[in-house]
Length: 458
Ligand SMILES: [Ca+2]
Image 1 (cartoon, protein in one colour):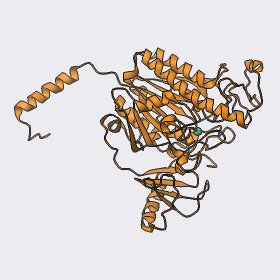
Image 2: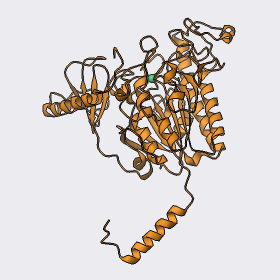
Image 3: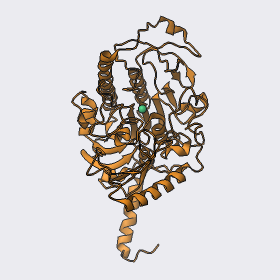
Image 4: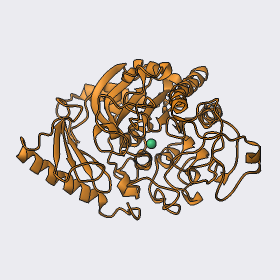
């Protein structure tokens, strides 16, 4: 390599500095804690404008870190976002284009050949733990313990009774590693307790702690409510006979329970942060809080995606623009940013910070320079896909294609900077832009779907 601008003495100095630098004690790579809410709407945290719910712990994370106003879940429903988070790639590449249901998809799941973020970080010497909702495979062969997580306790379906741990189709669904096992308790609290144990066990080595919570997804049950689901199919733990069940809550009570679930989730975040602090790990831990998709928008419950249009399951912003908070004291300067970030950016970010290279080409990008150096990300097109519909982003512009989930068959064009609520379709006004973006969107859609193994019926 030629270095024409450096004089010989300077070269020597540079070499000396390099030697000195590399001889210094290596700094331990950071811990990563990812706390993900389930169906939490864009406007359901104090720091995102909620007047309904009090969320002081999450608000404090936002206040002391980076709060993103243009953070997106990769999917508009649960499983796809989780697959993208775990692989750093569009979820269609790992076969998870839609929700994995107990009824139709019991024998499918996130492809085992995919390197997960847990497998990646294990290569860098990390301890890996996941406690909570998996939802990318029911069969034990797709269990988190087979996908790189040293420790797992939680459930694999889309939702469980938070007390009896029975899923909505009547299957018992609480696992300790890859064995079904009843552990009494309120699921969100159990997740925190396992998380705290994990932090204590691994405080002396770098770790990845993934805490995907069931709140505030239905069934609506606050910490003091009671079980209402019983086992109808499959394995039934003997201890469940002792558990008293009550009918599902009626509307007014459900709203009360929903509020308690959001606020209790906030308290669970607070407990994890307090534990990191008491173990002296806070300065070396990147904590991320996000949601897996938009809220239901059910006003009676207090769910809100304001000021966005749409809700969970849809490709309007309300379906996938969600809370995204990155907190790392002393490393991430507290601020609010409108940078566009996706769930699948987490894995490449962790890879760069841990100094390990993923096996596959990532669709996501590392956020290291955004987080630590306040640099903007390079411009990139982004896509969200469901079976029939596509949303395609280029900067402020968003094109919606398809007929699914209440979208018309003709393309819709919005400028999100001027019209965040997607009220005014500009397609007729910008036909050339529609044409170019449509061609680019279909090309990208085909590229991602080609070669991917899709779930049947999706
Ligand atoms: Ca969800």
